[in-house]
Length: 140
Figure 1 (cartoon, rainbow, N blue to C red):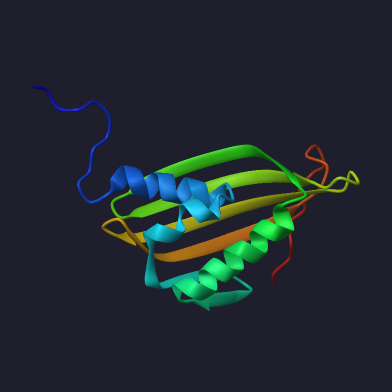
Figure 2 (tube, rainbow, N blue to C red; figure 1 turned 60 degrees about the horizontal axis):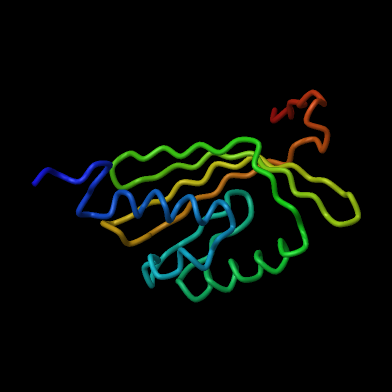
């Protein structure tokens, strides 16, 4: 018998990629069973959430906030390197009243085997019009 086709990794490589993708596509419930009890979620420039219970509560809060929005991903790229998965995405969020917001994000997922240990999230608000020029911020 031959080896199964596709990527196989006894430490959970394919699962790591699926977990990271589900999280970034706001399908948080699919990721909870993969989180370590001591998982941390660093929202760069905002706060750090520590422990599975608090991360789950934050995900549930986000799900409620996103429930009435239509989300369209304009870009979604997943890169796996060992026990780290990086997801770069750009999404448009459209409310029922027509209000639009666009966000670019980069999320880094650190695993130990198949167990999610840490998430680091970088986000940037983009102009609502995708054809509008992006402006640079002077950080001096």
